[in-house]
Image 1: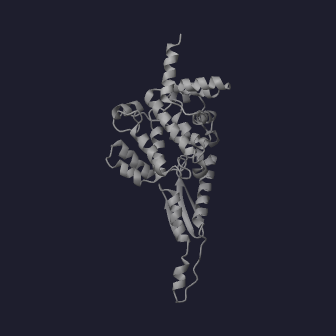
Image 2: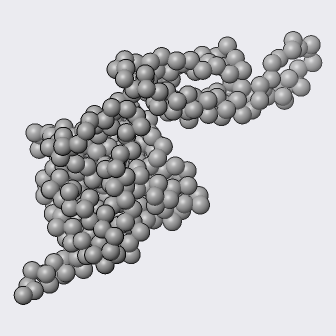
Image 3: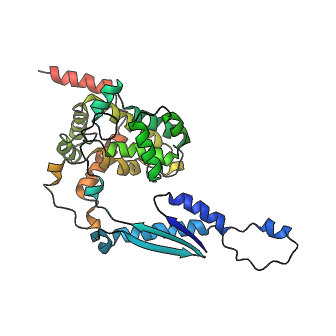
Length: 326
C-alpha cells in the first residue's frame, strides 16, 4: 500500500506521483522469462479519480456546518485501489482570511502602501506586479485555471521573501517557479495591501455606482470613481485590467472567463474597511460567504473588464475638464 501525506503541497503533483504507482509497465513483465506472480494492475487514471474524490470531499467538508463552527484541524483519509491520501483541513471565515493587517514597515513590498512602493522604486506600477504579469503572459496564459488554481504555499512564500528582500536572483526564480505560484504571489500582494487597491474611501461609492440601473449614469459614475483614485492605484489597476482581459481572450484554452477572473480578483481589489464591515451582520455560516457585498465586488470588476479599453491619459484629461467646467 502506498501512503501519501498531503501537507502544504500541491495536490496535482501528488496525483502525478499516484499515477506512477498506479500504472504497471507491461514491457517490463514481457521481458522476463521467469514465471511471475500475479500483479495487481490498476487503472491508469486512478490518480485523477482519487484527486477528484479528494476535491469533492474537501468541498463537502467546507460546506458542512459542523466543520465551519469548529476551529480545530479536521483529519481525514480517502482510499482508492490501495492508495491512501491523508489530509487535514480547517475552515477559516472570509472575514479572517481576507482581513488586512496594517504594516508599519517601509521596506519590502508586501503589506506596504502602494504609493510608498512606487515612490521608492520611481515607477508607476510596482515591480512585483509588472514582473508577475509578464511571467504569466509569457508561459501561463494558456494554463488551465490560471489564477483560480492555487500554487504551492512554500513556493509563494519563497517568492514573497525574494520580492521583499529585493533578491538579485528574482528573475531566475520567476523563470523556474511553477506558474500557479507566481499567479498566487500576485494575488497575495494585492490581498496584503494595507488598503484595497480601489481604496476604503471609495468603497461605498463603488457599491452605489454598480447598483445604478441607468447605463449612462452608471458609466459616468464608474469612470468618475476611477478618476478619483490616486495615480499609483489607478495605473496599477489599469495594468492589471488589461492583463486580465488578455488572459480571458484565451478562455477556450485556459477556461478562465471574464466572470471567473472577476470572481477571483473582485473581493481582493475591493473590500470594505474595518469600520464599514462592522456595520453589517457577522457571517455565521458558510452559505453567507457569497453575500450581497461580495457579489457587488465581483460585478464592479466585471464591469471594468467588459468595458472598452480605458486610457489613463484620457481619464486625466476628463478630470481636467471636470475641474475647469463652470
